Amino acid sequence: MNYRIDHIPLTTTCKRRPGVPMQAETITIHNTGNAKSTAANERSWLTNPGNTRQASYHIVIDEREAVECIPLTEHAWHAGDGSGARSGNRTSIGIEICESGNYAKTLVNAAELVAKMLQERGWGVDRLRRHFDWSGKICPRLMYDGGKWTGWEAFKAMVHSKIKPEVKSVIEMVPKVVRKSDGKLLAIGKIEDGKLVAPVADIVRGLGLPVDWDNETKKMYV
Ligand SMILES: [Zn+2]
Image (cartoon, rainbow, N blue to C red):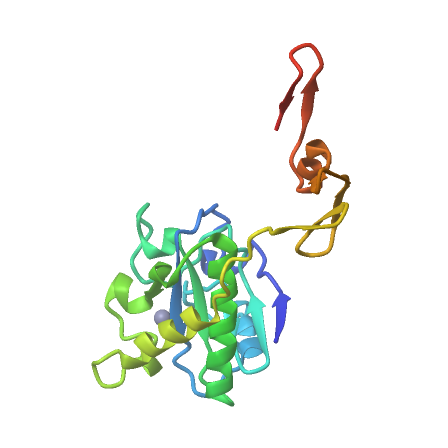
């Protein structure tokens, strides 16, 4: 799925892009409420002269692509709960899920994107919010199922299933050579009394950490 950045200008009417910095704490999920519009349509709507609403969102996603409309480090107007410091508008990234086309495919795309975003931030699905959580609006409406929000629980479960377990650095020692799990050569050593002996400084540096050697105290600082 393609991720396209097409930010609306800071000069967009109704202050739809306020340009106010935001350190996001959560991700809020919406449905567009429009059975026909695509992600490209929703992006165009934000800069359509006929649009007189202040509403805006960071990302809109459909069966083909995701479009980032507002930088994720600025706040938007998607949560319907005002501009207080703790509001959803000021603390949450808004993602609009399109209702057009192949909705099942769109939903999978959304789950994959959200999982990636959570993973990048070291977050779990407990960081996900519905528009409903901020303002009480029945949104994302296609996850509402007549008042039970079972679709919402299913979506969170799908996102959770797509979060890949953290890959830790594994150091592999084959005779005379120390490699990282991705194959990167860290150090070349030698066998002494059946043990591999290799320079610690090379290994530490190879893992991307700075090393300092104090010759007077014979100490290595990592
Ligand atoms: Zn919404």
